[in-house]
Structures are given as C-alpha cells and as structure tokens.
Length: 175
Image (tube, rainbow, N blue to C red):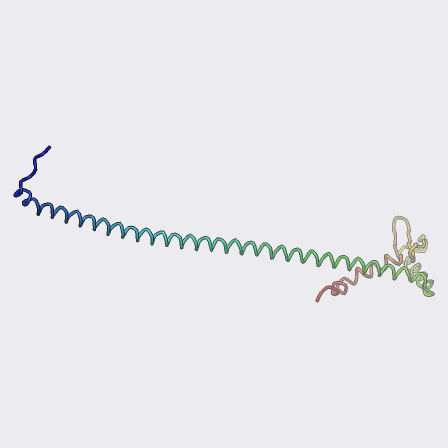
C-alpha cells in the first residue's frame, strides 16, 4: 500500500487532476457527440433503406398486379369469344335445321311434283339420260350414273343454299 500524499503534493496534483478530469469530460462529450452523430446517420440511412424497400415493393406489387390484370383480361376476352362462337354455332345449327325442315316440307305442297320433275331433268343433264333416279325420303331425288352421284334431296339443296349465303348468315351476328 502506498503512503498518503502530503497536503503540498496533493495541492500540486490538483491542477493535473483537474486537467485529467476536464480532458476526460471533453473526451466523453466528444464520444457522446460522435455517437449521437452516428445514431442520426444510421437512422437516416435506415429511413432511406426503408423508403427504397417500400418503393421497390410497391413497384413490384404494381407490376405483378398489372400482369395479373392483363392475364385476367386476356382470359376474359378468350372466354367471351368462346361463348360468342358457341352461341353462333348453336344459332347456325338451328338455322340449318329449320332450313332443312322447311325444304323437306316442300314435298307436301301442290308445287312439289313440278319441282321434282325439274330436279330429275337437272340430274339427267348432269349425269346423262341413263341416270338412275331414286326418291329421297326427305323429298327430292338422288341420281347416280356409274360412280357419279348427284344428291338433289331437298335437305341437301337447303344445305347448299345456306352454305352459299355465308356472308348474309354471318351478318346475323355482326352488329
């Protein structure tokens, strides 16, 4: 253990102690000031990083949402087109059925015999005078000569007439 200092030595060391204490306080204040500055800088850096992350997440979310909307819109257009085409097909099939039924109904009219003779004349013009003529169960005739066949049945004539009227029929579903 060391011996206690004399009062004179203690008084002589007082300015050294005061200088050391002042230096320690100054160093402490400097350390605190630097720590506060680093804290503010770190907080600002963290705020900027957070803002960047939020902006990046927002941009990513918006891009993903736009892509999802585009996919859903395209699928919606495809579904709508498919529905429209299906409805058109049903209407066209119904039109064809009604045209064939109306054509077959001609076989039950007084004018049918004249029409039947015209069909036979047409078949003989196409196949020759030796053409074999058969009555179609739905009205009209079917004629053959060798390997050639002419279908002049009333439903077949209705089908051909409907096929030739394509642009007019397409106009039924064009606004």
